[in-house]
Length: 370
Image (cartoon, rainbow, N blue to C red; front, top):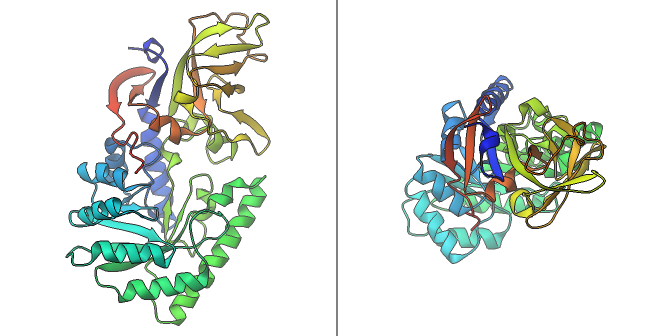
């Protein structure tokens, strides 16, 4: 069927664009001498992870243990859980995962490392460990002094393998301009280079220097210190990625088909049947001076999904070229501002080629957040 014949809201993915994005990115990473380890929290679909591996990724990232379990069940053999793992149950599951696949995690404190050591004690399995540095994200990570102590402990602990150093780098794409992003990338590289030098001065080899983030990928690839990149959104792209000039709307594979259920009397806005339970409240808003709010109309990207309630979305059609022809029951296609939470909010997505649906895929990791 045509994608506009789907019951709405419906998440659709253009398979040709996905394949193009995946192939182009792995070739780009390879041309810069970097390893590509995509973050599958964006799509949570085993089939797409397998496509990424088949085209040249060295492994994948997940955000949580439960996501890693889903991907391991799907045959993915090299998984970095890009997070600190805390909790008896999750650590036991982590140890079980390590017995059947190549698994690695992040640590940023002695408390987290103590828990990891206890979980793996007595096991024949080995868990890889990256030490996470806090370099501006104000999220997880630690400073150089604690990180140095953690690396030494990891190297001395049976069943643990020091994989390298890691940071997210999310702050890179929260600057107000492309020039700020470039400056932040240089600062990030200088900090990573400094800490790597400290370790090497103490005869500690650093196998990998791993950094995440899709919007700043072109700049990260040009940093000599970085050996591994972990983008996620690149497989789909979204309005935020486009606004940050890291993609074009022609590179956006994921969109949401919605139905107009009401139109204001003055034709200034239309109400659609996709709200926060479809798009999520995650809203970059205005990026690099471009207004994207919760999403943009695919056919006319200056028309925004301006606000959400649980089950309703408000599309500002005041400057929509077709607003006088718009009727209740019409379908609209919206590119979300942030693709990742959209996927996690739906049980299944529809693969399309040339606007025709050819397959329905379950979101294997949907709701896997523990």
